Image (tube, rainbow, N blue to C red; front, side, top):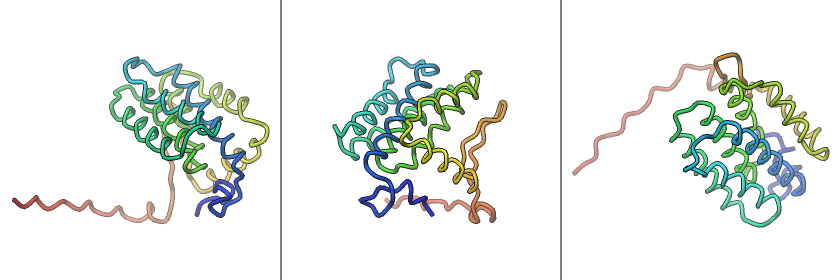
Length: 187
């Protein structure tokens, strides 16, 4: 079940629009910070464009649909990448802009930590940067949300040379379902 603190008021949750916009701006700041450090493909600007769309939404200048398209584009840029650090940074940008649609996507800033670790940067320094730039008005919301997600096993962590995307649920503890093969197309 989703944390109601990260569901917009107009959708029956507890999150005021002002805080939703602050979450989106903060996530965009975190994404831009790591993109500037690890993104090397000057021809593909989709992750940076996603950050700009997120910022525009946080100012009330565009619609959620624009942000959703930008999120898809940022994730497509990640899939087109070969560098693991750049992939994680593009995913961070995709989640940042998706925060406009679902506020709990702001926790995708964990991908910035993953990118930092994969790039050989100091992960704790990146985490400290994120917390330093967290707006005072949403600080308690984000920190309590992180604790809630950690308790559920929904975190993005960096551990040494490997990264762990932990998502524990009753479904994942069961045997994985076999993949269905598609039937050949009829002619």
